[in-house]
Length: 289
Image (cartoon, rainbow, N blue to C red; front, side, top):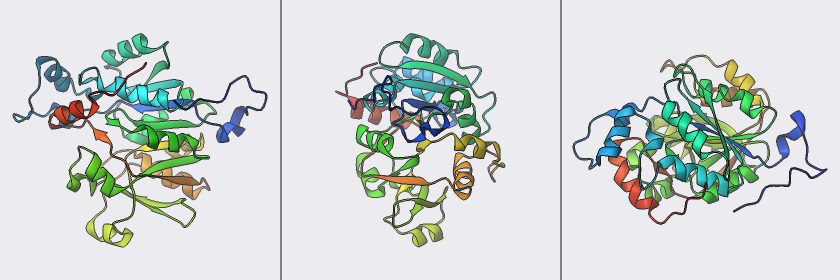
């Protein structure tokens, strides 16, 4: 486990200037509707408990030996995170109960409510009080990001995102190559700083960026500047408030985003067809909460 800096250290910065310190907080986005997970799939072999949770759409609570969210939180703790806020919907009593019974071990776990599912920028905004003046890791509840990627992210300065190697994702994930080609593609300058990011790129954009361009899987490090940017986001063509648009606004206002390279696979729990592959991949992975 990567240890965090002692909070009693006299050299530990506080307040708005604390953006350079090693982060201790993470926001886990768990508000999604789970539309794909709710969809029937006769080819997916689920037990009764898995089917019940799949029908609810709360993907993070799918049992893969234990709730998938246990693995997500455990690896965050391994990376030095101490406080986690789950962004949930008002109807998500299952996640409130989960937070209450999980908090108090390696992690303090709380919740923030996104009243309506208006998009990822709005979901991040729901955790503004939790973040305060601190930097926060922000990631999806239905993805398991390996420890090396998270350790590199928390070691980065200021704002950052993990830029995943496309080939490594194809080889090490349970995600088909055609879906990976639809992930947000990242452009960076010679110093490894984000210059642009394009959600659901078309073939022309992919060709312009090149096959070596990394992709984003919503694994971020944000300073408090993201909340001001998120408040200015306009609905996308999909009608949602997108975190990528907030990132662009923050970048245009002078925020520097470091692209942290990661040649690793990521486990994805989006649909019923993912459950067995994720369960197999997580066998033997130790969970400590």
